Length: 471
Image (cartoon, rainbow, N blue to C red):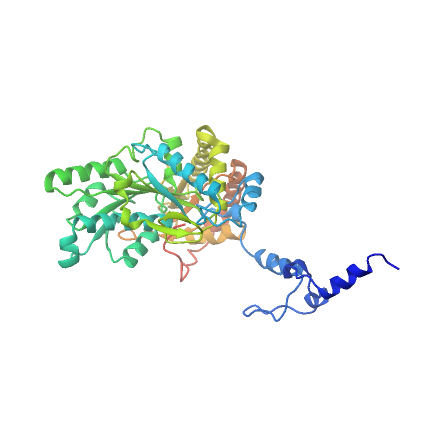
């Protein structure tokens, strides 16, 4: 007789529920049929089978490391991956529940404020976001609210319509902002070999209803910096001539994490009193996997207090200024890890390597003789090029298609007004894209060129080609 028989009787009477994920479904069922794709299956399957179904389908995606279209990080160290996996379950908004994660966010804001020369880094205001698009929306909202508060009589009763001045090369999130928040977009077109905003042309578009001017530190079209200091000088002259005091927002999605390390003498940030706010993407040249951006204001006056909500949430008073409520905390932890891991010298080494790769590639592609370089990778580690004069056998879309056959994703796209006649290829060099990989890219391009030269003419632009790669 078993001494623990009585325990078995009690267990039978009082069964304990377990997490349903702990138990496996019938393994034969997972082998016998394919689950539906557009509705929930009737029952569960084994975790191994579910993983394999998803894993096998994702094999058809391109290799992220060979994606030269995206600015988004495609590589991080194993230790960063482990740290992120330990934080996947943390909600960034639960600051009372996860106070140390909130503290890491605060430290990252302070570090960026110091990096961008805020007058008083401790007084600068900022927050993490899900990316630069959200950060730009927040910055735009602050610009509009400051203008509305200063022009309450004309805006509320007089029907004055606010406007925002920017170049046609801005990221699509700014078009969205103007649409969603009912702001008139005033765009400075490209002209000739100028592919971004012109300071004088921008100032000429400003009036008493202008909430601000957006300057791009690193255009997605060609990787060039816009002249932020020149823009501020033009707006200073406008203030002196007409009394219009127009603030500037710097969209530094990429360049705000390049210029502080590689172009230290370039004045573009809070050293310019007219710069009210700056954003960047932690998941671009901030070297973190997708899901984190940053928005900073030079001081509390630049971010109207009425935009900050104070919520009694989970037992504490929580100030929040964001479009999303729940957000992942893992990427914030990964950003802090990266700041600690690299420091200024480490960031400088990583970004310099990316720039060296970009400049080397641009020089080698130029040497083929089939292309004309628009930029050379000496600002953002990004360069754009088009076919040279006299090249009639192929176009940039042919090059993009043929390189894709070898696994390389190189975007080909047309420029916006007034340069719709210009179509280019763009290469983005990021951390993890080494000179060795660049050599493989150049070898593949060199192998393809003789075939392309033998074509009777371009095969034709794809019917639904994107006008630009903005990410």
